[in-house]
Length: 161
Image (cartoon, rainbow, N blue to C red; front, side):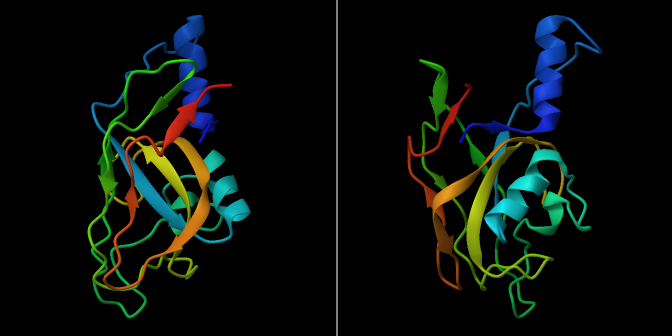
């Protein structure tokens, strides 16, 4: 995963180059958010959209807390931590395990239960905060009732190129 959102790119450029507000402060906690839908569409929304649930925004594609049958799916953003960067990249230093789904995953776009993309965000509530980094999963994963989504230690790497 090496795509940075427009938000993060602008904040870092202003901070490093001494421009604009120069006030970027890293979040004290980072979270992984899960998204379903056609990867190209979701990635476009993650690049420049918002957490709103309208067309073209990433909020429309984030998994919701309600499953396909309107029962609670137990989805919640999950905290992630990273090891110190080396060689221009950093990897998660612990497993990131989401709650076991108590219903099939879905989202407000009705994109189904297959997680195609993830994002590192600075807010813990669905549709809130800012997308920092995002990417498409190498192997999309369908999450149905009883399934658990997990990113194993060192399997999420963020690189700056």
